Length: 213
Image (tube, rainbow, N blue to C red; front, side, top):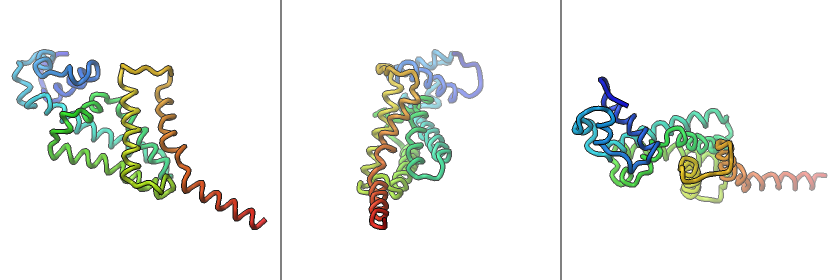
C-alpha cells in the first residue's frame, strides 16, 4: 500500500487497521506505517503524536460503529425488550468480527488508561445504550431479581468475551457457521435465562386455571 496524495490521516488509520487485523496491536508502529505509505517517518506525527493517539482514534471510531450496529440490530429485532437486548449483543459480536482493529483498540489497556474526554464520552454513550437495554429487558421479566449493574456486567462479559474468542486466531472452534455459534452463545446468555418473572407469571396463570376448572 502506498500513499500518493490526499488525506494522510485517513490513510494512516486505514493502514493501521490492516496491520492490527493481520498482526495485532503490538505490531503497530508509526515509522512502519510511514514506510508502508511512502512518506517521511516524521509525517504521521503531524496527525498522531504517538501510537496510543492513533489507537485512541480507532477506539472512538469503534464505539461509534458499534453503537450504530447495536441500535440497528435492536430496531430490527422488533418491540420485545428481551429480544432487542439480545440483538444488542449480537450486533456487537458482528461489529467485532467486521472491524477487529477497532474492537482491539477499544479494549487495549493503553487506550483505556489514557482516555481523553472524547473517548470517555464515546464509551459512556456505548454503555448507556446497553444500560437502557438492560433496564427494559429486566422490566419485561429478564432477571428482575438481579441488580441492573450486575446484569450489565454479565452481559458485557458475555458479548465481549464471545467476540474476543471469535476473532482471536489462536482459538479454533469445530464449526463451519461462526454466526450460528455466536447466536447460540447469546441465546444461552439471554433467551434461555429468561425464566424468572415470565415463568412465575405463567405458573400463576396455570394455577388460576386449575382452580377455576
